[in-house]
Length: 227
Image 1 (cartoon, rainbow, N blue to C red):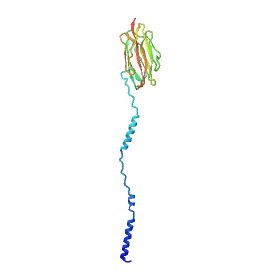
Image 2: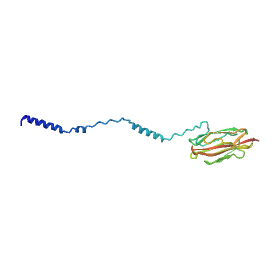
Image 3: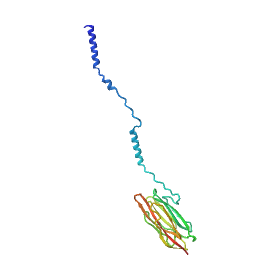
Image 4: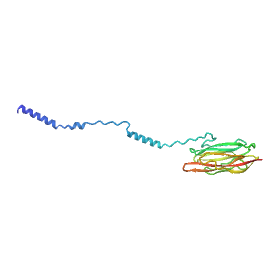
């Protein structure tokens, strides 16, 4: 074989080898680097917003605060009120608090002008929780004080009345007042003329729609005749 022929055959073999070498292997190993997502993606905000809204909706709103300023008693507390000697009750004021289901009270007394009311006593409890309250001081005596205890479970009070009398006083022309308040409304009551407070009548009311429990009060007043 001549040198020219041998060189031609060698070039042919090299060309065939290059043609049969796979070129896809480099493409298989090549990987495209992933594009990093932003730290705060829109999906993250959607989840956080939903969770925040859901948790806030489960938090109950705070109960409204009630202000007893200007009143002698506190909401939900027991109390005792007594007029000074020779004085009798003449003004009753009250305001209702829906957060406690109770009332704060304020009382005023008027001088009788008959010297000291020397025969005084406290009544027993005159009502049960949730029942009708109805009591009049007997034997020509007048209301000169209140004692009350409150029960949160019942949203109601029990009451005692202090009654005092004088031998120089005769009561007559007694009458019931009109309701002095609506349930859960403010109460304002004053005696007039020569009338004085002798008793209390109150019915217990429930407002199922609002969840309120309260009493509607009426007062018994009598005119005084001085001996």
